[in-house]
Amino acid sequence: MSNTLGPTRLRLGVNIDHVATIRNARGGEHPDPARAARIVAQAGGDGITVHLREDRRHIRDEDLQRVQAATGLPLNLEMAATDEMLEIALRHKPHAACIVPERREERTTEGGLDAAGQHNRLAPIVTRLVDAGVRVSLFIAPEPRQIEAAMKLGAPVVEFHTGEYAHAEGEQVAIELRRIADMAALAARNGIEPHAGHGLTYENVQPVAAIPQLAELNIGHYLIGEAIFCGLEASVRKMRELMDEVR
Ligand code: PXP
Image (cartoon, rainbow, N blue to C red; front, top):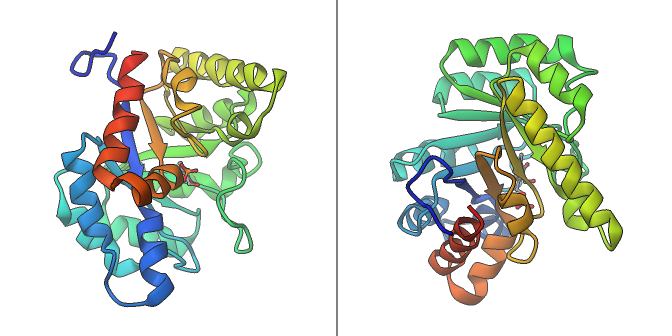
């Protein structure tokens, strides 16, 4: 049964990077990510997510301020653990920052952050963001050692990379789903708020949305792709409805 106002509401963060990807294909101003952010707000999205990549292939520096000012929704800045991104995050002070691994040659964020292996690199970045009042999350694989690492780093939130689930076939789908569900429970037991995202679609979102500990899903590519056919407001509304149906 849907319960959009109660404590079980699952937040939907809409990643609008690919509005900028289309804009950048031609240069100029159209389509404008700030306009997309306003439509997401009208459609029942709970947050705007953008990934400022090192190569600026989609969202650019000048978009951050405009997107942040476009709605009252919280902005979630996905960022690599670099000095440059830390400085930008501290300047803009988004509501949230999600630290992601980034490789220049990848098409998208292909895997989770190795929070366990990079403690020393991540620790000062997490601390400075937390001290600045930014809600820090780590984009990690749903694995116990990564949750333990997030705890040691003092990150209040983890976002599980759902790519393995989204790309799984046959029996593997249930195995990947169980992994996410178990790790969401483990994170919540340890005081960390679990989120999830990557590769989620109308077809695969509901089993993930039904995991009770998850507080937020971040969804981008599929929603922007669907928007080509039905409009952004409709694509976000439909995702919102599918999520609410299982809560
Ligand atoms: N969450 C994070 C941390 C991401 O980096 C991305 C984009 O790779 C997403 C969610 C959204 O993934 P998608 O665009 O596949 O919906």
